[in-house]
Length: 320
Image 1: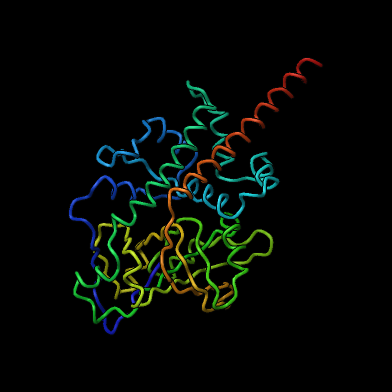
Image 2: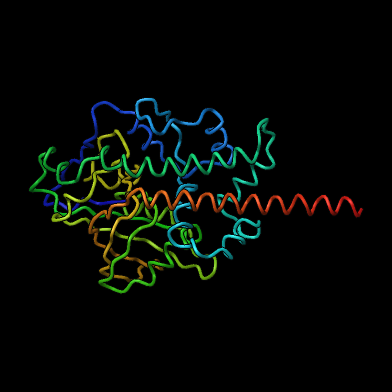
């Protein structure tokens, strides 16, 4: 979520590839609105060949599913007790809801196989999206140069409003950071050019009603490290904010963005964290190999849980 700081009103023109490649189409199918049945139907229509960009099918990326997997891995990997609670129906999550949906759906294939494929495909899609982000988008310094705005754009300011309960793992870790400290984001973050838009995505903490917005500043000396990840083909008029309130001007921040906390304050009953973007710290295949093993751990846990439920059901039937 973002604002352009400039010396005068200016026009922000998306600088994206002239031809929409399969990779670009893939990344632009970013949504947080998928229901469980949408995700399942998407997979049943044909699993994408994520290793071949030329033949990549445009599968809608389920933002909730991807980020829940990443947040569990980055911030909760050692807490098997929380994992047990989350996948034992007492704590609702998108993943738990998806598993419950598959188990109850009238599907003519193995439910366990579909759950397994869902996890594995999304693990590959996360890796694919992470790497292709850096080759699909251009850095912000190249954007301002190619659009002849070097003298006009002083900074780029992004805003993100949080569903506190969904992003609790991320926000609880960020809360530990002192002013001047740094923090690496463990998931993808969708942002908008307007603070107003960010407020529309806030869901308060269910415990105490706390509301959170992140403001992320990209200063000129970091333009060469930030990517112009504008998820739209439209030309955008930044100067008319009345019109912009009707727009969803979305920028996507990739995994493992390094941020420095420079301020924290409360305004209008909302807690603001103000960060400066520093860089994207690289993730290598070791990270994704470990992530895949974590996916296996979750799937094994689900198998054990389901097997226990089946044995329990059989015993109850026997004794009755």
